[in-house]
Length: 288
Image (cartoon, rainbow, N blue to C red):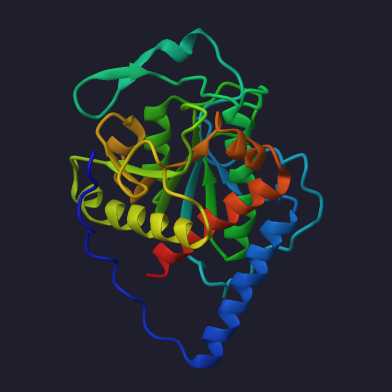
């Protein structure tokens, strides 16, 4: 499929004095460096979603250093980011219940996702990457809301995740996934709902997707060589995107069946690189 043209960008905020720009840039770099080295995800006061927004997720097990809470003057202060680690840690019979896709038909509540050839599951990869993303975004001052609370229980259906994202009032919604294609296929692609079903999908979501694509390329990631167009893929079949009323994208970070990308995904430093790149994409979009 061919990606649609770039939609108008969001309005630029007022220009800050030079000294303040430098200070904010330094804060951003420090927060993203924290993502690279690994930091404990704070468990006090962060919003999550499992039927009701308000709990806190488990910390990512491999991350150990404590991180201070963000200051109110950080660059994303006042912004809300909704993060959806794709799939669920467990499955049950309810996962085949049919839910609306937003285009008049239905699909399964949730799917199991894919895995590397060695058995490292997509749902754990997405949970760990989102955990690192949450730390970086909170360091930048954002309020972060998660679609599921852990990597062991049955998560929400895809339509419920969209409803929670809408209810959160998020300025940006990111669903993180990894693909399960052929071994010789590799690269990321960023999905958005098309044809659009509302003005946000027609404008802000396309701008967000394009900004994320550009940022991932700048971070050294390679657009998919087997799907989409130059790293962008408009799709009509993803319920979470179709039902969204907020700027929303789904990022397939790579192919878990590619030996090279599987090594990156199963490596702690590799996951940190993915997380840092996506955080930079969110910041790039929200900062205009």
